[in-house]
Image (tube, rainbow, N blue to C red; front, top):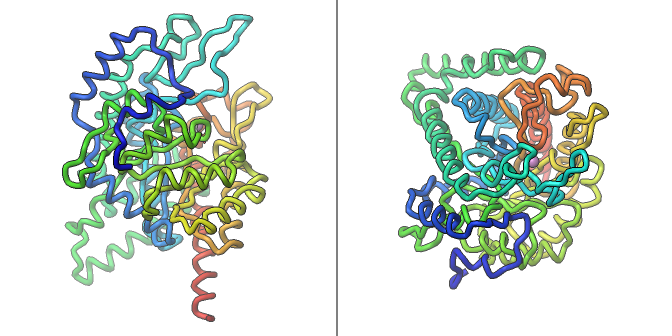
Length: 457
Ligand code: PEP
Ligand code: CO
């Protein structure tokens, strides 16, 4: 948008954002953040956009994953390393199984602010404002902890910068070298999916040995020794986003400097609202969560506002309808996209439509429902002749017990063992890998079928 400015959102209706009580403190933090370096470079965001354009055509596949909410008290090198590792393993399974390049995008280095289903929370008759993520207030159930504190934005920035620094070091410093494919297996990984991964790793090692024997130098080839890893988060706390927005001198366009991709949540996607206005003016690739209440008219308006030039890779539609509901909603939205002739990348988030309360009282997601939604997503694209461009998971490399099911079955009773999430329940490493095998299977079937159709015609 040509006359857009980074503070235009302030004149639009806003929801799901805190009312800071101390305006002076807020202004001071915003001023400080505005002077800090951005976390990402515009050229990187443009490269990611190209990869997402590839994914929209079926020439690449997006793997987006990480915590529901990053937490200040769970910030550690091991945590970052383990999630990075599992994503590398999953990407390897997908690349190997489906023969397609995988775009790796963390829900990391900025995923701190959370939309909530209710503004307040009541426990034992006491009502307090809801917890909105570590960048805003604190989880502890006391009136003081729930007061939004703008200074938390500075801590979030610092944590995001350090996280991104480590991710960049892992990506290019030798950790992600394909010659080390065996070493990415996690210490506690066992069971059939870990075994299946080791088999793939063996075959990759074989191919590498073959190339070495044939004189191809895999030790120094860039594609073998490094990976591209990008970051993303929900663009919810617009004071933080605005303060990190910079004019990119190369393109003359604005960049949200807080991460490579930002997305708009299912609760804050009002076409005339603050969050859509902010995203419309920055050049980053934009994700848009699409839940059951997304109407065709909403989607039309949103595509027009967020991607007026119909640029491929700019807009990723993240479908999150819930198992059993994909068939009701995805075809009608695919139809809208078709009618508009719009370029979009379709991605499946099988997490947010499948959250339930377990009998033991924990918020959980049955692995079966997650699997089922992924299958339904592929089924609809198969029937419509459209492209499933990627998946979006809440997951961790830690051996947590937050989602039930999987081959190393987590039961309702197990949930309390290692339930550590700061918000929604995440897939653990084993469940994540199991899912990657399923996605690889679906993807390779679809590709074989379509290649067959092309050959026959
Ligand atoms: C999320 O991704 O954590 C989230 C809140 O998703 P949604 O907006 O789709 O509910
Ligand atoms: Co979530």
